[in-house]
Length: 251
Image (cartoon, rainbow, N blue to C red; front, side, top):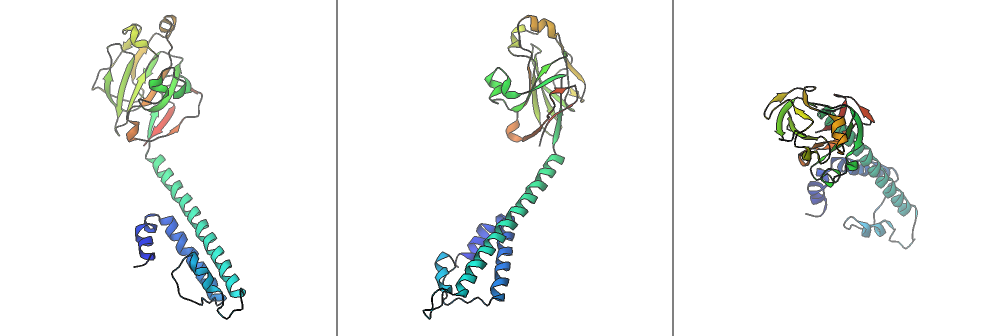
């Protein structure tokens, strides 16, 4: 069978950009070989070992035929490489656009300052053990729904809430660090589990000043808890957000 058929059907056909690039390089090389009447003086399997077969067998040594072959080889490789890179970039850009168009946008559930999730003083969040996302330092004590979907989790301490969007993206909004120890004091939960909510609906109200006076950090992680099933690929570049401003997207 040789190596050509397995290479084409086993490898190259799975990588269309490289396949088209190899074909294009071969066509260009073939055209140049025809124009200069390139000659091969022995029939061997293709590969590096075939290079000497373009040296004349009459003992005249390296001549223009051999150097034409080297030039054609270089041109073919360069054309194949260039076409492959160009096609692959176009392919990836197209996929990126399609992905962005089909992405699920998560809006900010609270007004405040946007911070990287890595700045949360809890490894459960900062090391993304529960998922990827962002954190917000609230400037207002109101949490709203960041998208249309169901409330899938509340806590007796009212400091955290989980929601699932229509495309099965699940997020957790956790108001403050160690605020579970407040046992619900200073929090007012306005929804219940299994309730359907719309983007902008108020979910929780909390007394920022009272919580801060108790010595608790109010930083609020907003994370995709099933991020293993989704890609968190586009996050806001805004430093400050209001409720319902764009926060990040997943697909």
